[in-house]
Image 1 (cartoon, rainbow, N blue to C red):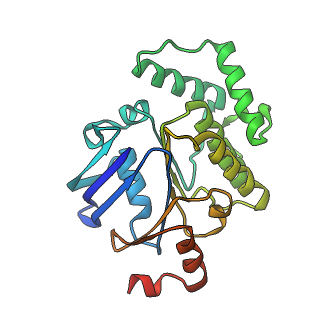
Image 2 (image 1 turned 180 degrees about the vertical axis):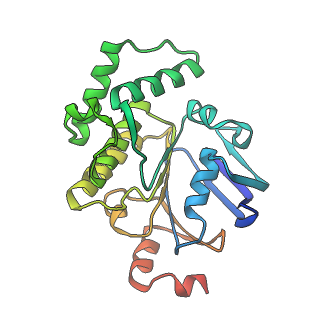
Length: 247
């Protein structure tokens, strides 16, 4: 589903990714762990197409398409979703307005008819209820005044509405209490656990992986994958840290 081969990327002329190779098959959840500055968030931004991150070498294909040739909105329309460690606030734009425009823009990109206001509200309310978010928050400006947990729940609502083929979730567990972590984990499983979907979870800690069981765990250090294993690898890292693996 997602194939990355010998990926090199830099920002402001500084190399960050240095020959990263990774394959995620449909139906799989892969976790990326690693120390600060390893290149985890850079990988997510490169895949999402964030400006300022320059790919200098390597290939990325998504469902057989050359991902690196697509603009960010084209990647989203193709089914890619990028969840941020720190979701941004958008004053003056309501959640409902933002999400309806996003969904219909993607539907248009796929040649599908737009959803009416009424049909969209049914979908949005159902997704909010599934994650335990008050439907009234859909009327508020995007993430404005939201707590860390509310922002992450809101991001799960966004993902549920857009229903992507592949989700890249950058430290989705950051700043969550136990209840919010469980809700976000349940949301990821409900929306993305399917034979035709894939997930790349970027995290520092084991705790999210207690709720979203990964098929494969990778350690990213120095811009490359330096170790790969099963779910037990995350437990080893939690107990011993990264020093030995990186060394």
